[in-house]
Image 1: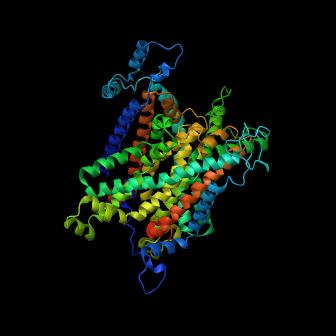
Image 2: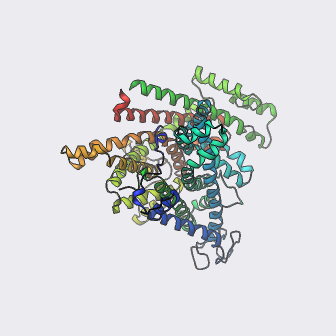
Image 3: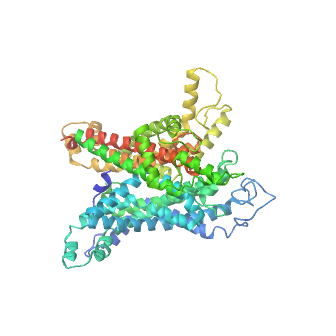
Length: 308
Length: 327
C-alpha cells in the first residue's frame, strides 16, 4: 500500500516547454487549461457530460408522458413513436422514468464527489501536517476502511439510512469515499510541511488551522479538483449498485439503480427495459471519468499517460 | 527479505483482526436480531425471544463488550464462530460456501492480472497508436460499467447466442445444473460452463483497472535511461522491454494489487448475487437483511483473511521483483 504515498508532487515548473511561448510568464491556470484543450479525451468527456446534464434538465419537455403516468393501453410495449424507450409491465413510460432516475443519480454524483474531496483534503492535510499520533490514528482508520470493502459497510448501514430520505445517502457515500485521496493528500502535505513558505508562516506564529487553510489546502487544490471529478463517477456507481440490490434509493423515489433493478427480470426477453437505462448510466459515468482523467494529466504531466 | 515479509504480514494480520472485531461491534449496534421474532404471528413471548437470542449470543440487552468477549473466547477455545439464526454453525455454512467464492475469485483475479498486465504493457509500447486508443477507451468503458450491469449484459448476450444456435450452449444461472446425471467428467464440464460468464465478468472489471495502472507504470519505465543502456549493449527491443522494462513496471503493480483487492471482493460479491451463486457474498448480504450478526462477522472474517493473503502475496512478489527490499 505504499505506492500511493510515493506519488510525486505535481511540479509546476515541469512541462512548460510544450505550451505557449511568450515573454510573459504563463500562469498555472492558463497552462492547465491549454493542456486540457489539446486533450481529445477531455473534449469527449466534457461534451458528453454537458449533453447528459442538459438532457436530464430538459429531456422531459418534448415527451408526452411523466414518470408517474400509466398508459394502460400500452403495457409492456417495445419502443415506439409514442413511448420512445418502451413501457414497463404496468404502463410506465421508460423514457420519462430514465430521465427522473438520471436526475437523482446525477444530483447524488455531483454532490458526493466534491463533498468527499473536501473531507479528503481536510483529513489528509490534518494527518500530514500534525503528524504524530493524529497521523497514526487517521492512517489506521483509513487502512481499516480499505480492508473492509465500503460496499459491505454501506449495506450494513443501510437499515439506518433507509428510514431517512435519499439525501442521507449522499452523506453516507461521501462519508466513505474519501480514504484513498486522503492518503495521497497526506503524503503531499508531509513534503509541503518542510517547504520554506510553510516554515516561515509557522515561525511567524501563524496558528495551525490558518496554515492548513491558507497554505496547505490551496497547494493541494488541483489534486482535490481531480478527486472531486473522478469521485462523481464513483459515487454514481456506488449509488446504482446499492439501489439495484434494494439498499439505496427506496420507492417511491426513482434512480437509475432502482430502474435497472426493475428491468433486470425482463432483461433477456424485453431488453429495452434494461439496456436504455444501463447505456445512459455507463455513458454518464464514462464522461465524468474521462474529464477527471484528462484533468489529472493536465495538472500533472508526469503522471504517465500524456507524455512523449 | 523474510523480515520484511513477516513485518508486513503482522501488519495485515492486525488490520484484519481489528476489521473483524469492529465489524462485529458495528453489526451488533445496527442490526436488530429480535425484530425477526417480534414480527411473527402469534408473537413468541419475551422469555422465548430472550432465550433464543441468548443462545446465539446476540441478545441486545447484554452489553456489546461482553458479547464480543464471549464471541472471542468461543473462537479461541472452541474455534467456533457461533451459530447462524438458522441454528447451523457459521463455520459449516462458511465451508459449504467458501469453495464457490474462491473458485470464482481465484480464477477471476488470475485472469484479470495476466490480461491487465499484457494489454497495459502493449498499450504503453504502442502509445497513441490506434490499438492503444482502442484499449484505453474500452477499459474506461468497462470501468464505467457497474459489475451488475456487466453481468446482466453478458447474460443477455448469452441468451441471444443460445437462441440463435438453438442449443443451451452457455449456462449462466447458479453454480451447476441441479439433478444432473452423469459421471465426474459431466459434472466438471457442467460447472466449468456455469463458471464461464461470472469469471468473464469479474476478469473484465479487474483487467480494465490493472491495464490502466500497468500502462502508466510502463510509460514511466520506457523513458528510463537503463532501457536505452540495455539497447545500446545490443539487446533486442523486445528483450530490453521484457527483461528490464516489464519487470520494473510490475513493482508498483504488486502494491496496487494488494490495495485493490478489497474492491475485487466487493465486485465478486455483486457478481455472485447477479448470477445467483450461493457464495460468501450472498451469505454476507443475506446476513445483513436477516439481521444475523454471527454470520455477518464470519463473512467479514473470510474477506479479511483473503485481504491478508492477497496483501502478503503481493509483498512476496514485491520482494522478489525489487532486489532493494532483500538487503
